[in-house]
Image (cartoon, rainbow, N blue to C red; front, side, top):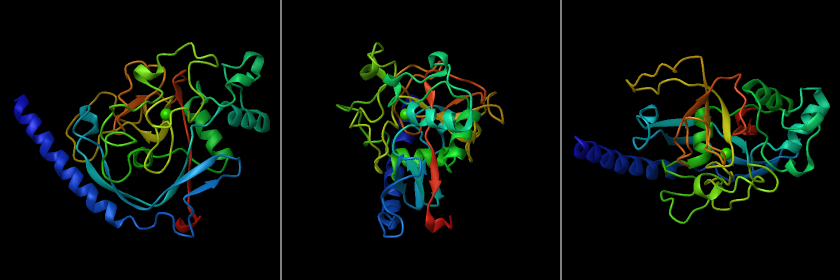
Length: 277
Ligand SMILES: [Ca+2]
């Protein structure tokens, strides 16, 4: 049984790689003049372009909720290169009167956290911030494509974890980091996606726009499926309960939208001009 399962996985992996190679050949919009590969959004955050086209979403190598892998085609979009930081969130709180983070003594952001990813935000907090900067939360598909590119690779940097460091697991054991339990965004150069998005395999888990539901073509059922939990992605420096970071781009976890955790933050996406925005 185990042997058979391994054979199926190996076969699927080969198919996935073949599909990914074919998909890579049709992604031709990267870096064209109308849509620069990188830009600075109005609030100052650097964003990277994820070109239009298909990619491989899902995997057979993880939990059953990631299967089956399939081809998904997305329009082009920009995604924040880094997780939203305390400093950016503080600007939002100051401008809108939104309630300050519980991590801030007397409601004032400690300067040492300025460049760390914001945490302890509910889905509604993250959504409100995204709207304020003229963006939105990424769909689960957008997040995954931004993390792994078109060819179904396992990690943001490729298919092997050997020798690679990210703000999660063993590399993040430094939970007495002088500035907090997370790391300043972009501290791990290895953790860069094919488009240049950083910390997709660690630092903080990230809210997505989507409910936690079964993938198309899956007969796997979970009590948690439905409009109850939002998908969170990406692993973190702090273990999120029930979901140790695997660093794998296809890994799905979930949180009730009203949940607020010190391992959970977010980043935003924005449409490109070529999509009519
Ligand atoms: Ca992250």
